[in-house]
Amino acid sequence: MREIFKTSKIKYLFFTILLFIFTACEGFNFEFNGDLRAHIEEDVGVTYSFYEYPDLNSQHIDKILITGKTISNSDFPSYVHDDTLLVGWQYLCNSETGSKQMPNYFTFNEKNYINSIRPGITDESLYAIWKKKCTITFVTNWPGVELDPVIMPEGDLLQWPNVERQGNWVLWNWCTDKELTQWYNFSEPVTGDMTLYGRWVEVRTITYHKNDGSGEETHWDYQINTENVFADYMFRPRDGYGFMGWSDTPSGGVKKYPGDSFTITQDMDFYAVWSSDLVTVTYIDKYGAFPNKKVRVARNSRYSVGHAYSDDDSRYTDLGEIWVASGKTIYGYDESANVPMVNGAPNVKYSRWGWYETPDNQGQWRGSNYITITSNKTFYVYWDDMIVEGGDVLVGITFEESPDSDIPGLVSGPTVSGSTYTFTATTGYDEYRWYFDGVYQSSSSTNVLEIGTGALFPGIYNITLVVRQGTDYYSWQGTLTKS
Image (cartoon, rainbow, N blue to C red; front, top):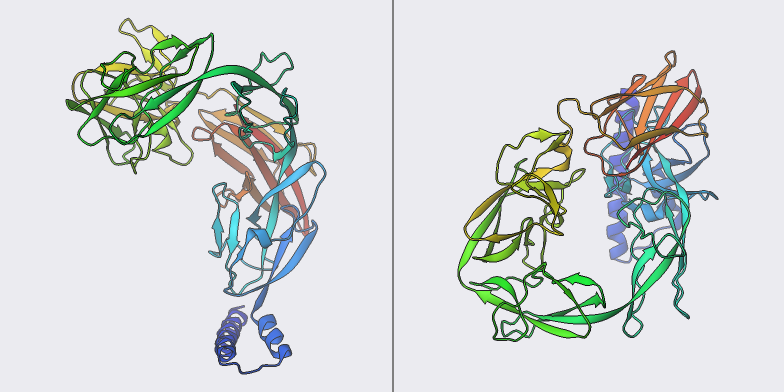
C-alpha cells in the first residue's frame, strides 16, 4: 500500500509538471495534439462517486475530476425524487475507493454541506442529503396579484413573499386560514405543504426625519384605526449627540418617545430630537467570544436594553442581529454577572424579546425593554444554550423513526439525560456509521450515538445509521424535531 501511494505521488508530480509545461507552451501558441492533452488530464484525474444515499450499495454517478482543480457544488451530479429534494452533499467514508476519514479537500456552506472540492490524488465518495419536498401556495386575496408557488425542503424557513402596495393598502400578514385569523409564523421551520392567505390592511405613513441637516429620512407604514407604537431610532449615529425622541416640528422638543402608543388617521412627519449630554451603555459577553460593545445614548432618554449600532454603524438594531454565533442566540441581559438559574433558564431581568421584570418580580410585557437611562450602565449578555444546567430536561424535543429504514427497530431510544439524547443500535454488526443531519459523526463508530440538543436551533434534524455485515450495508433513519 505504501509503494502504491508513493507511486501515485510521483505520477501526480510528473503529470502536474507536464501539464504546467503544456499550459505554458499554449501561451506561446505551440500546438499540442488533442489526444495528448486528454491523456494528461486523464492521468491526473481522480474518480469521485456521488451516491444517492449513504450506502455503498445505492445508485451512484462517477465523475472524473482533475487533481488540484476546484469544482463547485453547482457542477455536482443531480438526482431527482418526486417527494424529496436534494439539498446538499456530505463525505462518505469508503475504504474501497479512497480515504477512511475525511480529507481536507472540501469547503462547506453555512449548513455544513460540501460547497466545493479541490481534489487530491485519491478517489473519493460523496452522498446526497435529502429533505421532504414542501410546496407553499399563496392566495393574495387581491384581484390581479398572483404569486408562484414556492418549493422548498422541510426544516427551512420560508422567506416573506413581497407583494407591491396597492394604493393605501398593504399586504400586512400571511395567514394559514381563509378567515384570516391565524397568522403564519415565519420564524418556524416549514414542515409540509400548505396554503397561505394574504391579509390586507389600510395604512397611513409616518416619515421619520433624522433632522441633522443631512436630509436623511425613512418611511414607515401603520395600520389605521388600531393602536401602534412609535419607532425607535433607525439612522446612523450622529457624532457628539444622542437621540432623545420625536418632535412634530424640526425645532420642537420631544413630543413622542419610542414605544409610545398612538392611532393614525393621516400621513404625518416626525423629527429626531438630539442632546449632547451623553451616557455610555456597555455590553459584556458572558462567553467572552465578542469584544465589549459600547453605545453612546442621550441622558434621560428612553432606551431599549439590547439595542446597539452595528459594527459598521450602518444601522441601529437588536444586539442579537450583531452578535451572531453558530448554534446559539442571545437569551437576555442583566446588570449582574452571575444570575441564578430558575426553571432551567438564567433569571435575567431583560429578555431579548421584551419581557421586563418589574420591581415586584411580576413579569410584564413591555413590547421592548425600554428604560429611562440617567447614567452609565453595564449589561451582561446571556445566551440560550445556558438554558440547560444541572440535568434539567429540555421540552419540545420529539423523535420519529422513518418508515424508509432498511431494518425497522435497529435503533432503540432515545434515552434522555439533561439535554443529551442517546441512541443505541443493535449489537453484532461489523461497522457502524452514524450521521447527524448529514454530518458524519467520526466519534461515534460504536453502536451508540449521543446528541447534545441544548445548542440546537428549532428545526428538523435527520439521524442516519449505516451498518455493515460482511459485504452488505443497511441503513436506518429517523428525525429529531426541536420546537
